[in-house]
Length: 154
View 1 (cartoon, one colour):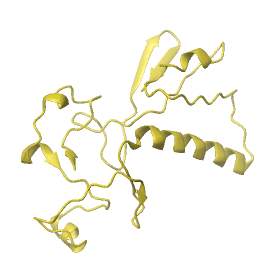
View 2 (cartoon, one colour):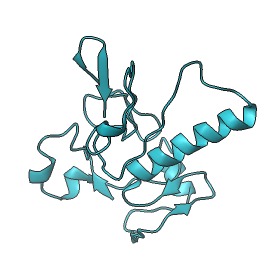
View 3 (cartoon, rainbow, N blue to C red):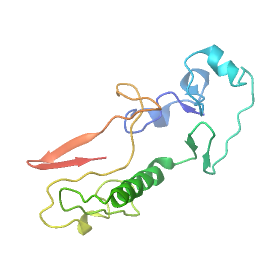
C-alpha cells in the first residue's frame, strides 16, 4: 500500500500529499492487466490488506519488504560480481566496488574513490512516478553530469 506517485525523487509534493482513496494504491506481487486477472488471484474489493516488514520471496518471483532500495542495490552488485567470477570474466577496465553505510551517492564514500576515476556508477534506486519511463517492472536511470568528463548518478 503506497501513494500513487511515491518517490520523493520524482514527486516534490509527496510529504504534503494526504493519504486518501484517490492518492493511494495497492501494489500486487503479481502481474495483472485487468480486473478479471486480479480476481483470478482471489483478490476482491473489500479484502483485508496486511503489512509485513520482513523480507519474503513470493512464489511469483517477487521480493517483498520495506526499504528495499539500498539492500536490493547491494544484492545486485554482489550478484554481478558473482556472475563475473562464475564465468571467469574480468571487467574491461579497472573496477572498484565501494559499498558505504550512507544512502546518497558520494556521501561518506567519496574519500574511498581511487585517483584517476573516469566513471562512477552509483546504485541507489529506480524512481517510479509521473513523468518517468518506468513502472513496477522496469526503472528509469537517473543520470546527472556534474562537470566536464564527470557523471554522477543517484
